[in-house]
Amino acid sequence: MKTTTFLTFVGEQCGKAAEAINFYTSIFPNSEIKSITKYREGEAGGTPELIKYGVFTLNGVPYMVSESNFNHAWSFTPGVSLFVECNSENEIDALFEALSSNGGQVMIPLENYGLDNYGFGKKFGWCADKYGISWQLNLS
Image (cartoon, rainbow, N blue to C red; front, side):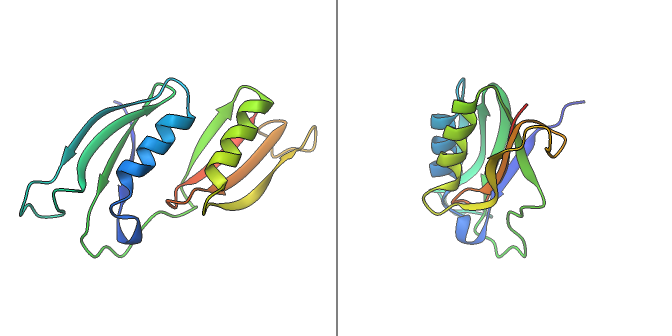
């Protein structure tokens, strides 16, 4: 059995999936877009400029993506987030800045916690990017 995170861009995020995965693969090392399949003209769920199904990796970890112009009653929520274990202070600082800027939102500021931490590590922050994806960044 294998699990993979699947991101579905709907509502005001529909049409931004390609931009998002290009952004993510540019800021995470060892990352690439593996495949993109677009909707065919007249196909239910989308239009030819939208991603029907895509696969990309962030630091070697696979993710799947789709977008739909149907009127869904849901979108991304901070209740589900991507948790990133960072290897250095420079790495966590750069990722947090990139993800939380340009329309993103800081939910828990990136801070050094030392011994008084959340139980994860020395430095931690939680943000949402401009696409609405929630990220927890941790320096163990």
